Length: 123
Image (cartoon, rainbow, N blue to C red; front, top):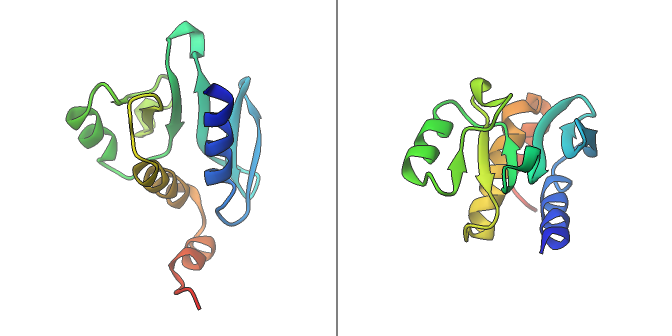
């Protein structure tokens, strides 16, 4: 399951304009234009038992999600103070919800030029 989950996260993250992947602090991480990290894939980080992502989140989302579903969402260490959101990947979150969370993470760090590409109608 873990390899499949990482492949799914990788596919979702690399679908956005000008994204790349590299290891950061020993974990797969995804960047916009090679500079700004928007998501990290964490598999049992410091033996916390979680298969999760840590991702950038819009203002207020961290509190809203963690209060609504505390078994699925959490405040991640190190980046939680910046409003990042932790998402457990083994709690039945739908693919659609996960895609939206990743899209929001991307939008939090991407420059306006790239975000505008997302907002263009499909022709």
